[in-house]
Length: 215
Length: 215
Image (spheres, one colour):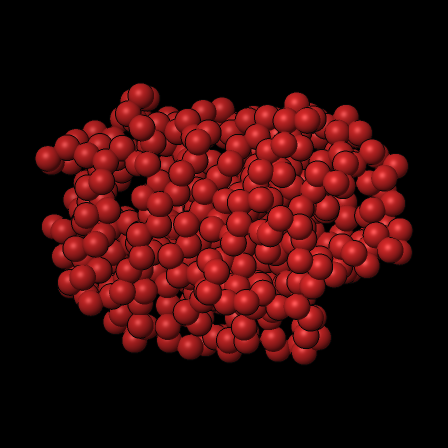
């Protein structure tokens, strides 16, 4: 297998959940001329609603997509399964605690799969909608994590670069950008629960609602 | 979920294939007093023989183990499925080529799963039998890759460190160390094929046989 010359090309892999952030990233990348291939993860989250939303949006934009099933036999996070309740207020400011919705190694896993895909199809860029402002205290949303990951990709000589276009934006700024790009936010799903309508009280709903109010 | 204080503890996750290298790493870590938990990967490799060998050895040493199934719908490497032949002589010295047995992102995927497991059980160390001397030209076996990965783990604040005790050893040196540790090499499996006996001609067999001759 010949190593492909990927650096700087316009083919991209987008980590795509069908939520507010990753949908904005997808629309932003498409607007910049990237040919986007979506990877959608089914990692045993509480509900399949976000996967259905992701597929619908990928199809709407005629983007090829792959659904990857990740089975973590040891996972105990409240986002997986239905045993533990999801938190409904942000108590994440204590520095030695992680939110119960933190899935150990999740973004690292997602990016590893995206890297494998990018190498296989010869994409030069991986886009992820990580966001360090209105986030839930996850260590894998911080800029220094992505800087370090890009050094790994350099060490591998893959020619693939991870880009995090939303990392320094607030939810309101993301929504304003998305509105300019025509992002169909009514098709996106952010709620940690899988009800008919968003619950309005989980961390993810609260950040989303606050963002729309401010935007 | 409280972030665990893992740095420097003696609980470890071992990436374990049941082959010569990772079995030596397991015995080495156990001899140093680590309580080892094995992760064994079923990533659609040509045969299940190495998985059976890994399970047998983990049980022999009374190590807990997890078998992780990774499905890569896009994978084209000759190690996966049975369509492409495995190479039988090492033509990997051209700098712009990767061997056909290279699985894009494989070790990064393996380490991501190991990281998730280590974070979940509170292990401070991940051991991997990567080897930069008698290897097949894989970019994810080079020391600089592991240095960069450890910076990612630092950025995540996990307290987990990746250790590669074999990285600078030749196959013969690995086998000599293993012999001192009582590694049951007759129970290990290195061949890329899954026949009754090792094929003796694939890269992996050739490195193994040469190692035993020299040791």
